[in-house]
Length: 77
Image (tube, one colour):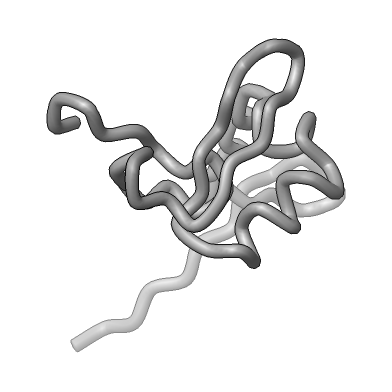
């Protein structure tokens, strides 16, 4: 991130606090926003935007039958 720039915690945009569309103070910390819509969203639920991201779900692709055996299909050429 460029020196003097901050990240809008709602949309992730990098902005200059001097030209930010708005700011809010939450728990003693000042947050800056690219637009009024991001500020409104943050003000409605600050914890939502400051909480650590949830872990990504597992992307396992294996399948099995109800009897516990694996199934596969092949075609001859």
